[in-house]
Image: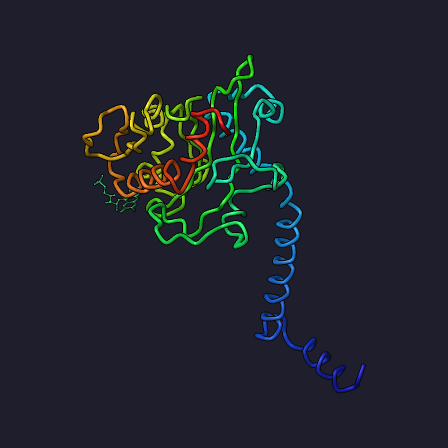
Length: 266
Ligand SMILES: Cc1cc2nc3c(=O)[nH]c(=O)nc-3n(C[C@H](O)[C@H](O)[C@H](O)COP(=O)(O)O)c2cc1C
């Protein structure tokens, strides 16, 4: 070590313990060690976080389909679903992707398989061309329920969830969000079981195939079989939910798939 560097170190070590130089050095060293520990923990926890996020999604899909049993193993329970990738434009299944590795949220950001939206009522910016959907069949092998991913902007956040439809692709069985950051007691009442129960039995389209489903405080003229009362004190989240559900159930979303489901041509 050069002698001038050694002299600087000697001078520094000779300083009193409460000198500014030593205080700053200890603070910097502490920060470095703490940030290294936090980074190491964050990196080592990532695989576990991913597993838990997947489990949480699977629980939500089981719940929205009305088949969640907390006493049963999630992976085993989830195996009752048939998973497919649907091309939204044609409404047909595709085997272009490996189902296990396909993630709608990543797909929506991938410029190769998503489009920037000119008309964007759901406030999502881009839309995936493909979506992962889940089918539940009865013991005879006939489709019993179909679970579709939906997302869109509320007041503070993008709400991510699923809608479960009966085999006809028109009657709603349930709706559930697994992620959002709306305000507890206001917009977050989308998670209230009493509000979610209002969705059961509602219809998406009328006899002419026109999309009629709506979520609002004001009752529309279309009839109560197409209407869900908005959340009290959360008009803006309600508007967001209305827009996102209508977007995903409409022509730009799953309508081609739902038409194929109705005619048995998926
Ligand atoms: C701190 C705070 C949080 C709020 N969070 C929400 C929310 O999550 N969703 C929402 O629609 N409105 C929320 N609001 C209320 C809106 O600002 C607005 O007043 C409300 O949507 C009006 O709804 P109402 O006509 O049903 O009363 C919040 C307001 C405040 C002050």
